Length: 328
Image (cartoon, rainbow, N blue to C red; front, side):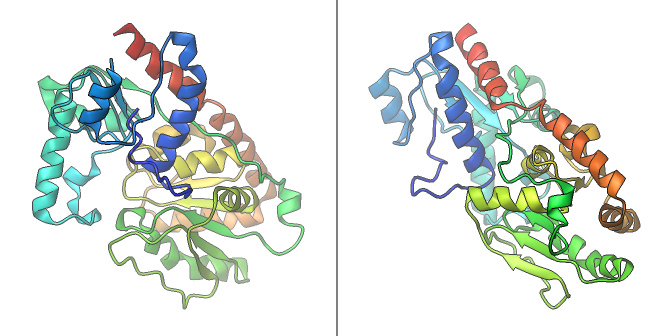
């Protein structure tokens, strides 16, 4: 498994980095069942392929280096950069090179794993008749150890609404910030909106002058779990998501989640959360207010989200991949 995307300095990583680490751990646990010897690769790939005599290479970042000898199995997360290059920090020339190499790697893959049906459709749209076989794996979730009941969350100060993830344009964070004054006005109190995650790119403006809006930087997995398990709401107003990991983590934590109708978010959330079009800001406001005022609605959303999250397992993802590779 190509683990060059995983931070080696102890940081938890975000997005693909985080998912790749959890996939490795799950695959390592079940590999002996399928007679697979699993090797973590951190060095230059061509050298590693020859030194280890690799029979297959699983690439959890989805980006396949050219000219590698063994059969390649990329795990693709999204192709948003093709339709919306403005969401990404690369210069035009570098983007042209990396995207062409990316598509070339997918065409030469033995089999493609996609994190969602939405991403699989994007792959098929780009590759057309040259698309290799695709398996939709989804992602898994490890659960949240910081879970508290509604009574416990409301025992002290009013719990916050949170936004989790790298600060970048496609997360569409200013949309929620722009609605927050009206949410607080209808609640007749200033409620905290915490924006948690590392700085990314795109000069996303976080208006901290709005009462209640608070910027929190990158946090450890333990603190992340605590935020997820103690929040009143998790907001995912993204313009696109290849999967929607934060929404899944919120459901696993028993925290109601409100997501946009873009990308794979409706597919992942299903009946476990609330999906609202970005063109309906009034519905976003009403639902956020309801989460604080309607106890029965909050508890129902919490239960439905937890049930939904139980359908997503890293062990299931690992077995799906290793069965496919072993059969080939």
